[in-house]
Image (tube, rainbow, N blue to C red; front, side, top):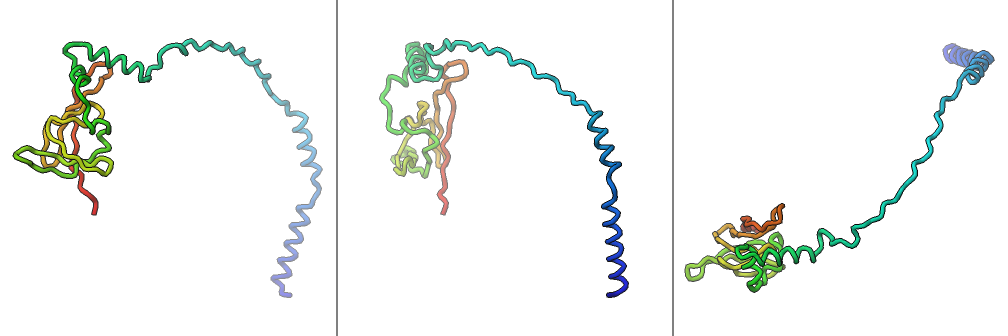
Length: 176
């Protein structure tokens, strides 16, 4: 063996011998700390008594029920100058069964000077013209251009009144 290796071994043995020295002083200090330490635990509070409240709204009309909506629509329709009265008294058109976001304008044509828009709904193609209805909010077509359809919809505002709202369907280009 070389001198360097021998010196390393002797140094390692010396360190190990120092680590195994008597730990009586350390043990005595740890025991003293255990005796002096006093736990400080606050007692738990007793739980509060739970008083259940009876649910009394079970017999009331649900705020989002179809029954409540139909009653409100009938009351609105009875008013003589109501926007909704004329819409409820006319015959529904086939495209009023679909929401506007399920429709896409795929083109436009002109027949005898009148503009028509081509709509794709459920992979079927429909021709629509100004004055026809589409969408679920009583949307009536007001204008057709080469790139869009302008509608007038009737929606309920936060106060429960029926108001007119403009809507558009843009020409959708197909991905190739």
